Length: 212
Image (cartoon, rainbow, N blue to C red; front, side):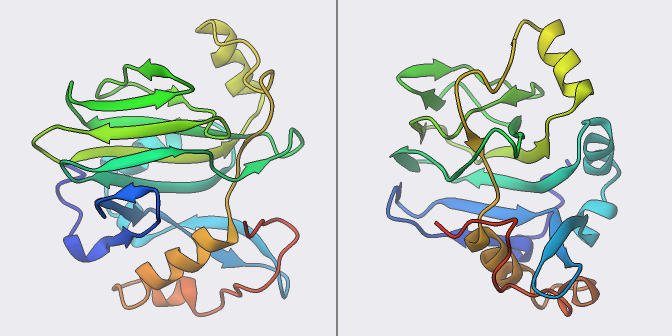
């Protein structure tokens, strides 16, 4: 219900060459807040997140400093072709977490040729620096919560407890790109309650971001 309560105006259509047809929509639950001139020091919750007790509970429950939190919704028939996402080095220690909220057996996420059976209500770490693709053949929208957060001792304990081992053993992980922030600003502009978050955001160069 929390996902269905998000108004259509909150979603931003994603257009890239590897998504056919255009069927990926994002709703941003965090926005960048400017610190020192020319830098983006942290991400802060949007009104969309603060006004949803369910989404806020998930946000508060997951450990680590958050750098990205959004809803990814795929329309039926959407295919995301094989690709890799921009990656940060080991020092960044960013985890990409997927939480399926609305999905079905006809929605397939494949990582390096292996089908990942993500079920609604589960929490998955995905190394999107590796080749992956998605095919949504279901009849209804498929929605995931997607979170980027910093690896810490609590995450280390979780990985040990659930047999995941060291998530960085395979190499580099996804990180936030400058293009994401620019697209996020465009999506949020004009939404009620976001002006105070966005008016001081500087989308110029930053040592903490990559633009690739």
